[in-house]
Length: 292
Image 1 (tube, rainbow, N blue to C red):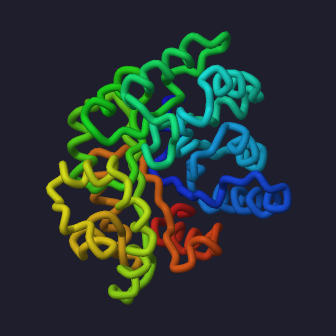
Image 2: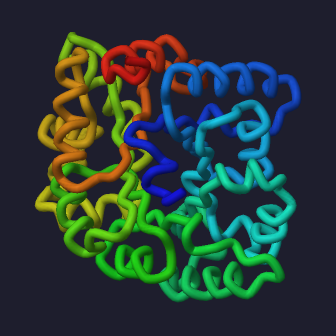
């Protein structure tokens, strides 16, 4: 099955699906099963996961594609990743997609020459005893060079913190054959001021990371847009805020811009303690008619 078909149109992105603590496994497995039943075709594990964390979700589900978004090349050696992929049972291996990226200088001690490092990493995946094929890997690409690499050495790209305008530009650079699966943050709250406040609290981390802010500058935003947690213009561009109609409109904008698949991330006020925002996932499934 082609990867764009396997991914489907709408997936869910959640850092809460990334777990190591045994006492959390039951809850996460149950949540993954519900996400599959709700109609999300792909479950994206956020928070720099490894393949061993994807295994928990693969074991809990039967049909959904499961992806890492993203596995940091600085935290996992290519040979180990390929070996873990090779060890997956055939049925699980077919449902797995490796989303990988170079992370950020502030988060990775070994961060250096990210483009060259990614090329070397892909060489390692290709040269493993059981290669992790290009057809089952996607790169967290934002800029032109990494987008081209995702086209040439992977199945496509999984851009994070982007706009429909970036999606249109990425599609043009990738061409028609590559998979383009951006992420979209959603705040389901009809009080616009409160929704923006929730979005700004969540956005603060990312506005401290140059890879993201440099990409936003390329898209036409200015340094002043990054002050105070983000201008209204910036927040409204990066999030779907409001009711179901507002969410559907933003989803349609990304798909019309050239996205094959959209990874939807539910953002709630107390994100740290609401690791698995299952009420919002259910509401989004209804809004996007995933079960109908």
